[in-house]
Image (cartoon, rainbow, N blue to C red; front, side, top):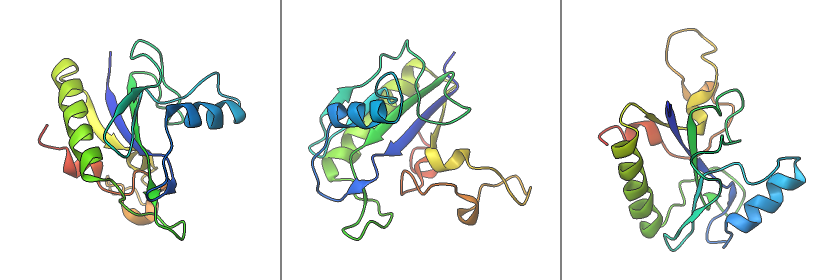
Length: 147
């Protein structure tokens, strides 16, 4: 059962072209069997398949079971700081992909990687100061709440 659909960024600088083959190599270099994401959204909006949906992902520590991972290329400004660098094409493709996934996995909750950070102050809300990572560098949970 798919419980989550998680949006990630590749943590690469704005405008730099990368694809699922690059991420596959980076993940293998870190000891993964293969790319951890199910989908990768390129700068031009092309959606590449990483892992099949039937395979467990490797993209959110302790939350990979029942979790489909989507990564868009980008997420950092030219100085390496977190920034929503999504192109118009990436935004459109992400929305279409998420809409399709929600149609098939109606109960799945869309989150950003950062939304899996621990609630350090115990108030029931993951606040910015609690983020382990900035990824995906925008509030995916809020942006896609209407899907």
